[in-house]
Length: 185
Ligand code: IMP
Ligand code: MG
View 1 (cartoon, protein in one colour):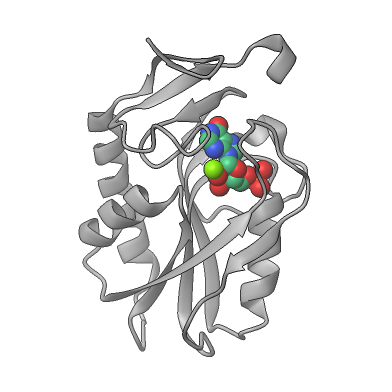
View 2 (cartoon, rainbow, N blue to C red):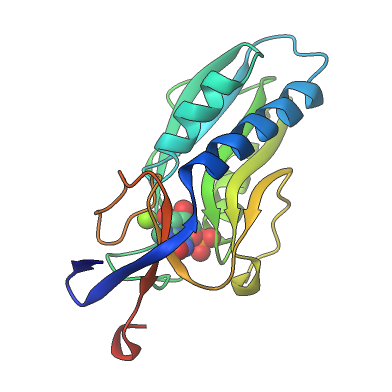
């Protein structure tokens, strides 16, 4: 058990071996979903949480890819959404007529993804799809289409494999649940 402030990092929800197997399966699905690429697929890593997933997914794909990065802010250091999303870092290339795949660690309320999808659509990409490693669908506020989904998870706060609590524990290999005390959550 690890303590971060008054949060307790609990048991393993998804083991690293299961994550790696699922990433390989997702990569195979994605490879098959783009039979007529004209240019490399643009993977948009949504910082910071998706960094490890993007790194593994990019290496599991056989398609040619380019990597781009965006950052949004929707959470403070707490475990509940602030309700508003802002762009902290935009893409640094034009996405016009490109096949674009947003790479998310987790879809929770869907606010971040809804915001980003709208923003990226203004670039007029050839296609715009979404892969998310985790789907916490019971908390959805905005309806978002997830084209490639890793795991459905229950309404629990999770850390590891890129996901943080107060910027910590992104480097855990497995995905763990966090016990949030009543007062904090
Ligand atoms: P949404 O906008 O509510 O869908 O949340 C998107 C962002 O919230 C994710 O990209 C994560 O950074 C963060 N988030 C949501 N749930 C969790 C969680 O269980 N653990 C860590 N971060 C989370
Ligand atoms: Mg986060």
